[in-house]
Picture 1 (spheres, rainbow, N blue to C red):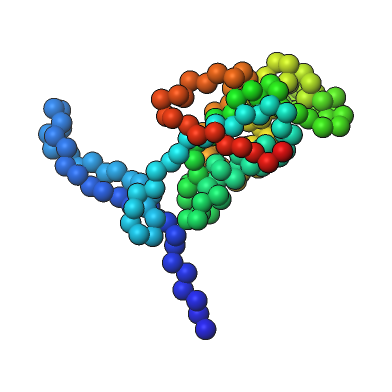
Picture 2 (cartoon, one colour):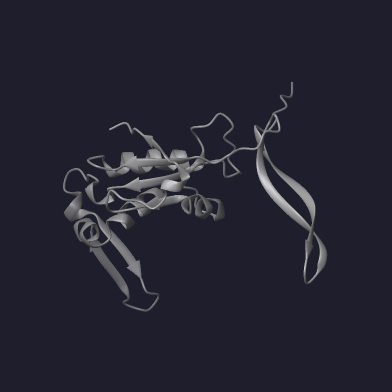
Length: 174
């Protein structure tokens, strides 16, 4: 017996005619996500406070929201996730001896051009990159993962510049 699976959301396109000065009338195409009932899916904005939260647990929960796995219409091949703002990234917690033993590598592309920093050095100089890299490594590795990562905004301090989007606060499991 075959079971037919219907997609929970899909990509929809609308076409409209637009009048321009240089080219005259052109056709404009707009794409957007719709759920199985045909309702347009809106992306929400969330704020996460990273104060005293273990880095791996924080990154895992942020990755779930960015991918959209917390929604009933999650579809693996579409970006159904929401925007996430992380504040206080400089106060994230690394357990054990990770501050001194965890290494971050960069490679310039030249022979002998590999650079290495400990987590302590990264937290002092670039605390936002520590959180961004942890989340990046938990997302899909292709173009869809890059698109999801663009919806992540990380700030070292308590202030962010996205108040106009009216973000909601998410309480994470510690």
